[in-house]
Amino acid sequence: VQLQACGGGLVRTSTSLRLSCVPSGRTFSVYAMGWFRQAPGKQREFVAAISWSGSFTNYADSVKGRFSISRDNAKNTVFLQMNSLKPEDTAVYYCAAKFGAPGNNYYTDLLDYNYWGQGTQVTVSS
Image 1 (cartoon, one colour):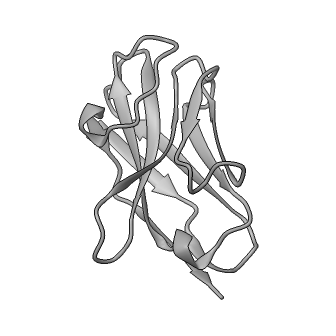
Image 2 (tube, helix red, strand yellow):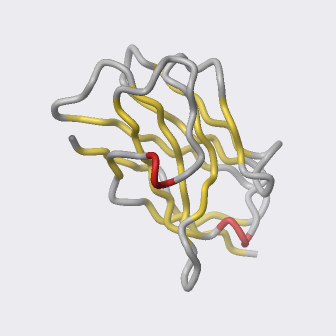
């Protein structure tokens, strides 16, 4: 299984970006997804998570009200809409998948995830 994350870039403060993540290869029929980020010199941290059903989501306090996670299961794609970006959002963003997860569960601990994408760089300049 591979996860392909894309959509990062260099943007100014208060602008928006949308990240996408697509699993490929042999996948289970149901999976929960999450986004994490890692800034230079810091540990990887939770950003957002979504259940397979899409009905349940969870966000880190630092991004609540600004970021939104969603998914289109028909297109096998998960999105992270990032609005009102701040310089402190600068990091490499990783998508992660937990296959075989029940429909309404989401996961905020990186240790819960089976597969990880390669990361996409988001840089927010002031």
